[in-house]
Length: 177
Length: 118
Image (cartoon, rainbow over all chains, first blue to last red; front, side, top):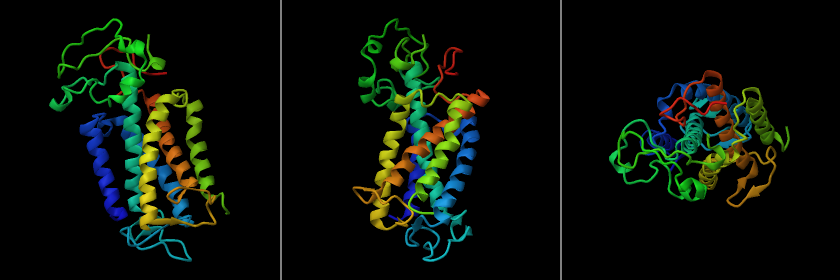
């Protein structure tokens, strides 16, 4: 596959990941759209240096634009490039940043609520997934104490039968009280 | 610019985002276990992408502008530093915006008011 194809695929996958698989739904949050322009600004800046000074060089076969020239800087704008870098890099960066931020939010949700149970109905395929939205190997990482569910408390049902919050569970090092 | 060129750009990222930990009390490095669990899987995945791209000739590096130290798969350690620092910088930015605006991120307790704020 070319870089272009992989980059587009990467973007599609992280969107599906965020909105429907782990349902962190960062893409629907104001805080993300305030943070992302800042991230993109610095990405354009640093990537512009990496590509403009030809520290990293690209093959025209893999990108929309043409190859990084042998003895001069690539165009700053145009020929499939934005600030010297191929547009594919923006998509690559989006996938990299989105995936990181969704994981960060996901693990935080584990810490604050024990299970990642959103205040909205779980999709049907989530209902048989304990601590839905959280990969089960993580439960092993959690402290054994936490799994004893001290003071378990049922939460009004908002969706699947397994959607419930357990007081005192979550990451032991980030427990609230 | 020499063999430190690539890493100099990485140092800029570290300084550019790192001050947020102190300046806006993002508490990202203090929650280092959560940070490791967020950054490492992503860095691993994108390192694989990088190895594939290098092997397929999608991109290559000016050997005089990187350290020259390479991991298996012809992966320069400069790139590994990139895949570790950029995710950390992204998390710092998100937490800084949360810290400055108080906007929810999605990991807060949802049925009572105590958020995860500093």
